Length: 103
Image (cartoon, rainbow, N blue to C red; front, side, top):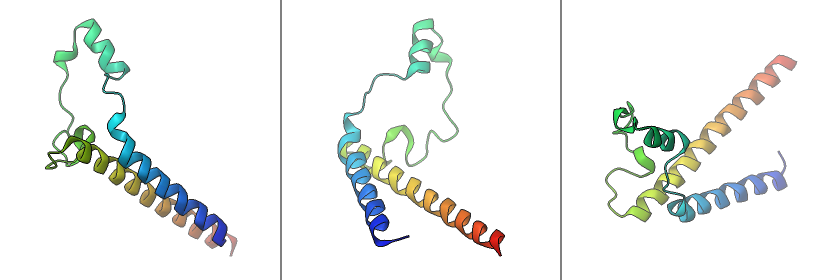
C-alpha cells in the first residue's frame, strides 16, 4: 500500500470513531422491526434474553459506566475498533494466502 491509501484508511477510521462516539447516542430508541411486530401482535413478553445479555457491551452500552452518553459513545468506539481489527486481520490473512499461492 502506498502512503496516500494508508492516510485515507487512517482518516476513515478516525472519522468513524468520531461518528460512533459522538452521534451514536442520538440513534433511534424506537424498537426494531421484529420487536415492533412482536409488540403489536402481543407476544413480546414471551421473548427470552440472549445468551450474551449480561456481556460488557450488551444493550448498546458499556457495563459499569453510569453516564448514558458516555456509555453509548464508548460502546460505539469499541465496536468500530473491534470491527477494524477484525477487518485488518482478515485482509492481512487474505494477502498472505494470495502471496503463498503465487509462489
